[in-house]
Length: 139
Image 1 (cartoon, rainbow, N blue to C red):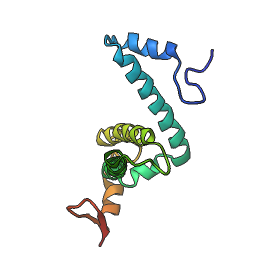
Image 2: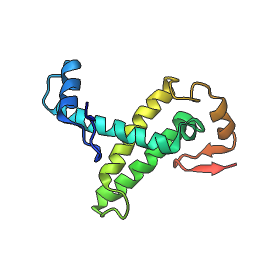
Image 3: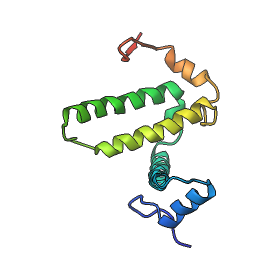
């Protein structure tokens, strides 16, 4: 049986159609949504291979929100000013935010390894305070 995700991250039409049918989806745009969501699954899996789960567990849901804020700040700057990115594509920031959103939900639900307990998060947060402008300062 062949792979359902190609080396460039694109999902085969058969897999997208199967998910669409199995979920009882009706709207044609949902096929494109599934395609993008499955690409994000592949992205998540590749990054987890490199990072592992401990980097997220160290700061939990709040750490994920900070990462998402960094991506949003980048998008605000690039999209509003029509600047060309010097590094990763704008689409990559959107993909990262999508992946971070799922990770944050897993943390919130206690399903991310090490995020079910606030023990690790509390240990790190004891040294940091969030200011109103969203920047973290060491105390």
